[in-house]
Length: 324
Image 1 (cartoon, rainbow, N blue to C red):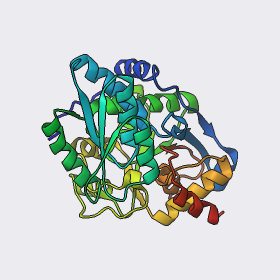
Image 2: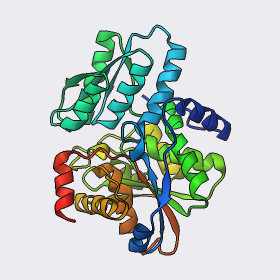
Image 3: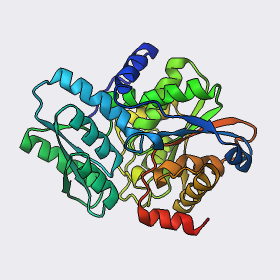
């Protein structure tokens, strides 16, 4: 299904970043003193919760729609499946390029993310019991309605997202490691692409929820491994079928893939809110949860965590605050 050239040069990544910056300003990265003291090492946080949709995905969408318009100037519209942030990215970018956007979400999807996508101009369709079923339906609808299918993993998405990795490496200086949450893989592949293009020795460590470990299992097996279910409250990483091309990149160039419990994710959300006054959605707190799980292993090092999104819903926020 996937036959991608995932080799990116520093020049190509920088040119892609310039397209992204027409729509998405750079986000900050900070070494938070209280968070570092708590972890026992220097911790940088890359704040992708500070984009216009509160998540990193908007970067990839901006580049993808730019290139789609160049390739297919008469394209009538796009369709995508999502649990939230990919759909917001597609909706925002499609609107800016004058394209119809149809977004398919599974039943029980985050109602606040659904409302955000509708507010950003998307036509929302609810189908299936999880992301995979929604994605399969979206593929069918693309053919039926003559829409361009925007997969959640694509080289253009990776190249656009890599703009945040370039910012991080430039702003934070030398890093021993970066922890990155994995949904379908665009974020971690983007960090790997930037790390490789810059010729750095930084370890890139993927993070998944214990209840949705398809990439962790794939890393262990050396091949793509799917799961029957994705049982986690972190909807941004609730995937059960990995992308072959992403598995290839991760298995070749990541240091490891760590899994964390939903309870650890919730505690990481609390720490980010208490020690940095930043709200992370569950998937956005995965990276910090993994670092804290490995704090002894990483003692004395300089490490970054990717706060990939801040779109926590009200129910999750109440749960976070109750534990503070």
